[in-house]
Image 1: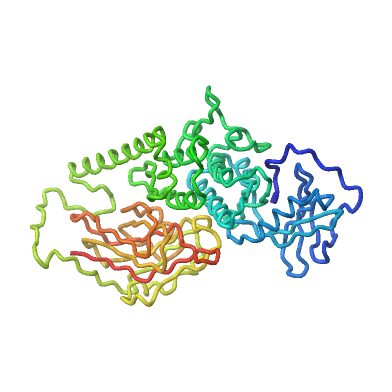
Image 2: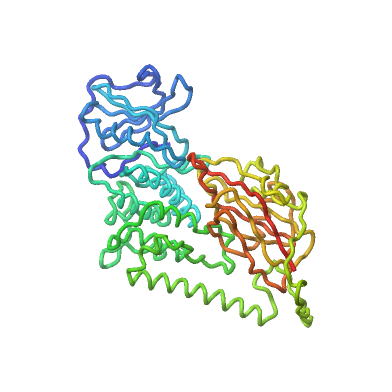
Length: 503
């Protein structure tokens, strides 16, 4: 694992090599940190070592610089500033020491690879994975900016992906020329690099060892969709908007919120087309509506999606079919049921027992399955809850589902879910069978169930009431791809009650 890679200061002159006190394996720094293996030396002369905290018996990364004193002042200032921000997507900083002849910073050891290493080994990433990584970076800098500081050193070498899927940002700097806007633009750069394998150095700052963006005749970076197929329109537009320096950079917390709303699940699209942009009223796109070119592009994308969906639904209806193959429709020649009036049309809750609800956890360890019955027990004081996650949910697994068996094909009018907090990303899916409560069954549910809705960020209550009145449904699944913050740097959600109503 490369804990520090060359970045924005790679062109600085190297400091003189130390003539005394050079570290060796087994050295004990500050009577606590034992050096285990030399990892690398970056372009500004910092040596990176793998070490161990002999008191807490945990692995650490040790970054040394010779000499200490003024030459190491910026490194130490950045470490002290970073230590004040605790966030699951930031590398933890444990200690910073200046011994005059040398200085060192001790921080969390991340077992994994940098984004630069991953793309070099695997090539450009799929849009879902790229979005997950960029969301983690945006969440990290939003936490930094909330304290009044900047990160100042975001590039493919400082974005680290641990073996367990956690994404963290490392190696903050405190250079005088870094700004909040620079950090935000680098989220766009991270997306651009993950999608294309190129870093837009002219728009940002060159990253040594990483190819610059391919450019058109005017010198502008071409869009990711021009470099590779399969990049959704909304992600392409979002990436290029963040890099467009003609507009002010949006706040990092809005960028993070916008990325959390993207539905990157490959099984999401009803028509196997990219999903439209789903920004809130205070989103990044809302801030950019003053620019006519961008607004026209966004409006065009949304119009095409709406027309495609409408055309497909009309065509299927004219053919007597359903817009979704999982829904049951009347057989050809069957007469529609006569319309009922009065109390008969009033929807009523469909009775559900604890045996009719289970948790779907594809990619998880299946330790969060208990107490699912509390979701349908009619008692808002009881709930099923996830465990506490230290990273966004999709950095760990594709999501989690609450599967409801209605007991047989039923017409459904509405579904409502009450949560312990707002901020969860929720969509609704349905299927025709439950393959069983097992790891394989959960994977089969994820791959076979089709969407009734796209993901939205829910408040404390989420509801859907646009069911096809002529279709019947047996299995409904509330699919969760993002958890709200628990206020302590983690993510967690409680589901208090789900009510399904039918005519």
